[in-house]
Length: 279
Image (tube, rainbow, N blue to C red):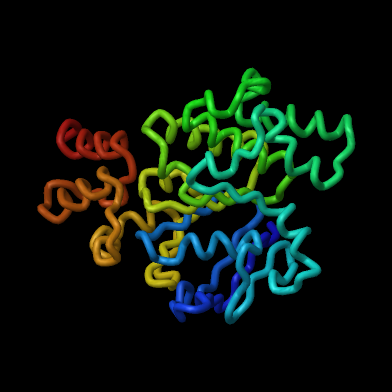
C-alpha cells in the first residue's frame, strides 16, 4: 500500500506573529485508509490540513503528496487536483446558484470537456446521494446537504485523497450524521483515502488510524481502540474520550469491569452483560 502523504519533521510558523503551529510533525497517510486527526482548538490540526492542499507550505521539514514536494511551485496544481479539501462552513465553498453548476466549477476551470464534465458531475452527486438536487438552489438546502454538495465538488476533481477540516462543526446532529454516512460510503464503496480533521472523538471511532496533535506536535498515534483506551492521557491533552470508553475506564478502575478497550455503547453493554449476566 503506497503512501499518499508523507510529512517529515514538518514545521510551520505564521508570518508576522511568529507563532509556531506545527513543531516537527512526522506522519504518513497510506492509500485507501481513513485517518482521523484529533486535537483541541489551536492544536495545529487545521494548519496540517492546509499543508495537504498547498494553501500553505512548510517553514521547516517537508510535506510530500504522491511523492511531490509541496514547496515546489511546479507541483502545486497537480497536488491540488490530488487532494480535495472541504472546510467547516459549506456556505464559504459554494460559488454557483445551481447545485450541478457548483459541482462542475472546479473541473470546468481545468478545461475538462463535455461529456466527461457531465459524467464527473453526475458521478460526484451520485456518490454523495444528491443527484435529485442537481437543479436546486444551494441556499435552499440544509446544512448537511450543502456540505455534501461541497464534498461532491471536491470529488468531481477526481482526487486521490479527500481531506475534511472540521466538516461537521457547524452542523446539527442530523447534518453531522448525513456527512459521516457520506464519508463512510465513499470509503466503503469507492476506496477513497480520507483525512478527517476533528475534535470529536465519536466521529473518529470509524477511522483506521487516529493521530492526536497537541501544541503542534503529534503526541499519540494508533487505532481508535489503542488511543481511546488511554483516557487519562487524553484528558491531560484537553480531550475527552468517547463516553462509552470513559465509563468503561471508570468501571475498570473500580474493579467492576475488566474490559477497558471499549469504544461504543453497544460494546459497553456487551461487556457489562458478560461480566454480570453470564456468571
